[in-house]
Length: 441
Image (cartoon, rainbow, N blue to C red; front, side, top):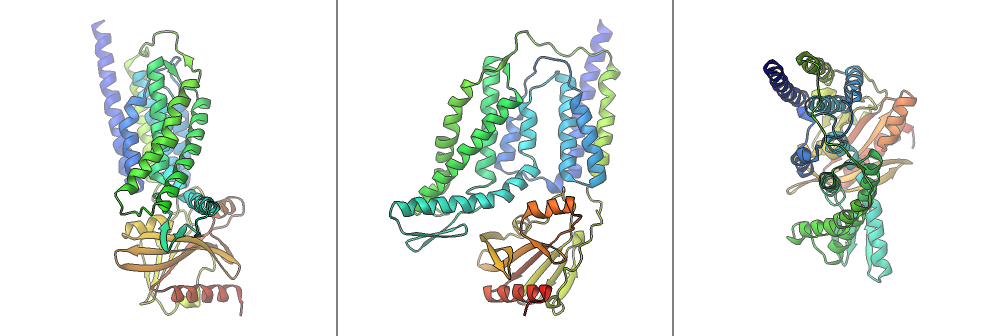
């Protein structure tokens, strides 16, 4: 008996060390793609609270999923697949020590992932445009004179920008993380396990409530002219999140009829010391192979992204095969194509790293081509910028379009980002570019 307990103690120690090494290895390979905002930190703090053992045998599906995603990450160099490799492998290691676990912590790890942050930021722009339109319509119906242009609202001469912070990561992901905490509280209180279907329903409803909270926030901020520097700006956001999102969810989660765990749970009975630790080096190897492929060049080439307007500019080759052209009036970045399942050099992210805030984003049409334009603000400095994705004469400003065409039509879209010190210079540079590209006089 003493030998058995000794083996169990050594097994638990090995698993603890294995989990720590696995997490450190993930951070080593993925640190450049990780972002720790408020929602991410809140998720990490909440993670232990969400963990609860459930009925049933050890789920080896997590192990299989980790291996499959590791192969995919190794072949594609995709950080998203690398992250999925880590999550499933990490969850399997926790299951080895604790037994079969509930689904909530797994959902949380994916919710606070860089992929979800990127997708949320990417699709928050059309949501911002729609909310701006709704706010302008509601106030117009109420007899208030207001104008909207993209994500800019003008009321009595005051300009209000519906920025990413209004409908972005802060409120959306934070609201969803707190939703998972509410479900975890119900699980612990009533000793049940929430099903995947129930989680999906509650999260979908939470998302819709979040949109309502954002709409209410923008309406109040515009109506009472509360600018981003006003102390009430953040308070209004928190109040709307609590009133229109979290309060209804507190009552909603009580109506679900969960699967009650009828018997007392026991720690998993494992045959031997080796049966527990054998998976640790295997999962570490899988994560190492997936992480090693992250910086590998995918070799995609995009044709005909040059223009004669670049000939008069100074050329500089930067990291990751990004080419920079510049003079006193223009700054042009040509960023190479990436695989459709990998992240791209989105200006909404890249310019943040240089300290610029991207404002007044809107869709603009030049010679029949829809592109995005905006203003870059850094203190007193201001640049006017435009960007689109291009492969030859095929141009789009849609992430969905270039990714689907990359998968099904073998297209390889480079990102073109042109910035200028004045709107006229930017407009002229874009018109010259498209005139040469399409031969329009």
